[in-house]
Image (cartoon, rainbow, N blue to C red; front, top):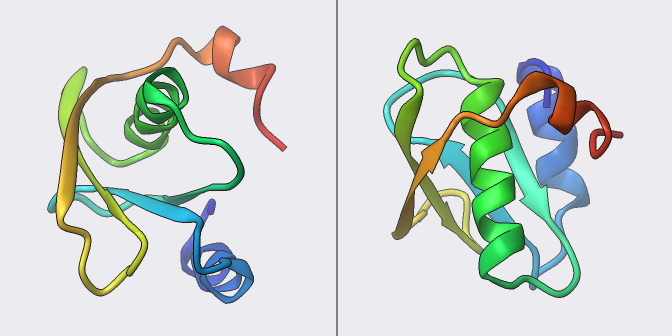
Length: 90
């Protein structure tokens, strides 16, 4: 989501099997991943999440899981290029 309101709406739309992503210890968007999730889609979603966060670093730790209150898994991501990401955003 672009802001707290968007993030709250996304959380309400989340289905039980969907994954939630958020950059660790940095404010910014949450990302919901739906459907088939493989390593490539997980990395790409983490990169987008980092890209639109308030992080000033090009690499960061993105937390994810099915329960927003308990994101227990993590992935190290590199910020996605802005031009590439425009193709995939809704």
